[in-house]
Image 1: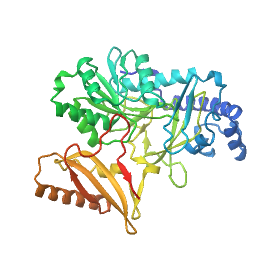
Image 2: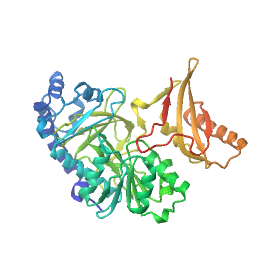
Image 3: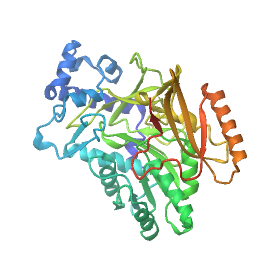
Image 4: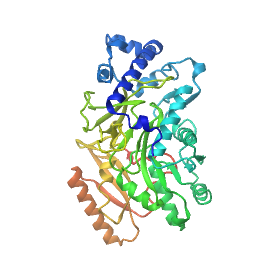
Length: 429
């Protein structure tokens, strides 16, 4: 099933034509309404007409999150204040929050891409959505809510946290679809098992998980623990929110469709910024082709992935791989680049280990040391635990090239998600 089959299966040459038309309108819009972009283009000696199509986007500079903070709160808005109907913002934990504004047209597009994503994930009109993303300044809760309503679903706006209430509603309201962070889906799966909740008594069929990187290891645990078909939804507030891309529930593992009629993607070299060929891993960059209130040119997401077309897929839009990590979250340990996901993918062969882990980084003398806290299944004797820790330590050394201290923890001892995003790294340096 498709939400907008004509758009989702548009032949590539027609998709490029549509993108180029929208890009021309976008460039005129930002040049005449956003002084920041006019100055950037003038400094490069560029006019909107110099960018003939998406193939010329590399001529433009990037937009970074720091640019949003430098123009806090509303200086990047491209429409009059009275046309801005919703304002979202990041948490601002590392400084001033990044602010995003939406016009009515933007909100309609937001609903459209989320509805498109939900259908891609297996949801259908008439189903109930258990929405466990946080409501408020974070775009997740309201974004999923609007798209599900547009699709014709009944939304249960549970929001994040309060696991007892979440489990009660899952049992009593019988939603077929749940959306939340993957780490919170892990928490719910564990609590169902701990409390003896029979999965056959739940109506859940699909889980739409996002807002943090995750891997096949976590998918396997969530699908078994909640008896669902789990797919990845990707988005970021600066671009629109959830619904920038979505994995198809029948094509899992082959990447997530980017709705590139609205969001044009590039992958660039993290150091040089040069565009990379399809299939090569780098930093994901987006240009918002249809946003009105706060359009962005070549927004540097910091997310590391690759993009490529899948000729055997249902849709013609390009796919992005799972996010390996964020460029700014990458750890450099004794000269080796390290993402938490590199440790996570090594877990499955060790049946006694659970995908609940945390990396702790600290200085010992002049050297950086990494400690891996990871849970076992609770059935191992102390001597067996020592052998398992040694085997996993060796696996890490062989595959990543780093020596790490592996500490096994009993079930429940590694920090869990309480509904929001979970940090897999504690950097104590």
